[in-house]
Length: 592
Image (tube, rainbow, N blue to C red; front, side):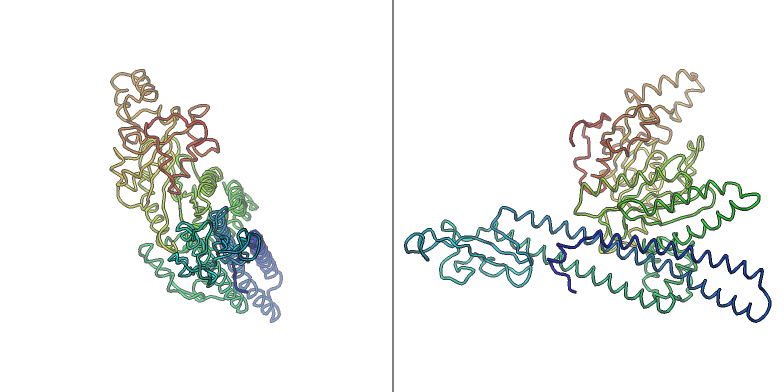
């Protein structure tokens, strides 16, 4: 069935989203069956390992295990396709609603099948009032925008004297033809309806084509073809390599090389999500065994709890999550996108700071989710994805006094941002980088070396960005900062103050630090000039103070903090309202 205006208007995207969730549950269930079967076969092999029948049973069971192993990623792709189509339909319905709202109360009307008309009464030319053709007989005369949607007839475009119904006189209301503004509005709405329906058809056809291809692959057991990963290259090189692969080669890589493929910048987000979810399932299986071992593996129970929570979090919330990287070694690495970064108009990458780790991921993902939700509410006609980028090992405690972790993050952060651009569809997205605490230093260090791609840079509660001014970041007019008045970072000594400690004692430094925090006597922080100071030259926006210095440092993403609204404005491009020209840190009161 071809998508029409009426079908699009009546569509319920929630039905596709519900279907997507069902396929995701099926994928997980099938993966569990795979694990159970593999375990039973291993136990069977220990008890029954002699004779022709045992060999045949082992070979048959192993073949079934291999087939089951390839199915979950394919079912997860169905989930992704349905969810993405649902999101597209939602966005297109919002555009239709905006077009219909624009004509409400005007002479421009849209019929139930999407035909656009300019409706004005015919003023009769003679005869008695109340009789056909007489004064007072004012039937409505629709001047239609024919030809489906998007075609405006010559009499509209040129405002000719002929009636749209073909009469000799003009279509008149109190002696007037349709006004230029009415004609322009009709043309605009007609073109928008045509464009929206065309995009809906394209999405429907693309989704159907890919679902049919998956169904055909299912008949072949989702078998793949072995292929080598690229040894080196930029994310753009990786994107070109991926585009040149066959579907069979792509399927093989997801199943056979999930760890390598899942961290490869330039590969589409949906593919990385499937690969990393496969890696997550395998790591959960390994950790369950490690916890059950005697003695259990040190730290296995804590990591199992964290990754079980991650698996649950990926399936929660109104916005689909994409697992873009998972490295369970050490403190771990984790990159999660909320919304599809490859198809979104706006993509914001949030870089956490001190103390963040794989085992404590939940609060960091919640912060990215808060920005995504506020940005989507602020700009419903655009699509926004946020990324929680824990692709580095943030320092703990006194290690935060060093730039080492920020320097180690530099290349990976730069590659990730470049990969977002390389994998993005339909033109470039608006890219923003948001660094909180030490995360702002990681961004500053990367940007001062010219290795990071971003349209807007934001520093929250920053201890310094490793540079002296916004101009050093190459984005002087696109660097933003907010540090509330009682944030703990303002009370820390700078390196210069630490030197004074050796000369004048701790009391000297304490007094100087307190003065800096209250009256901003100088802008020096441990890692450079305070990005929220006038000296630095960033565009400063307000944030509410916390109940104490530690609460203040963590509160920028709270629902009632004006800083969250400013973040949404920056991410979506509605940022002129975000700047505080007075550059103070007092919270905004009342409606923004």
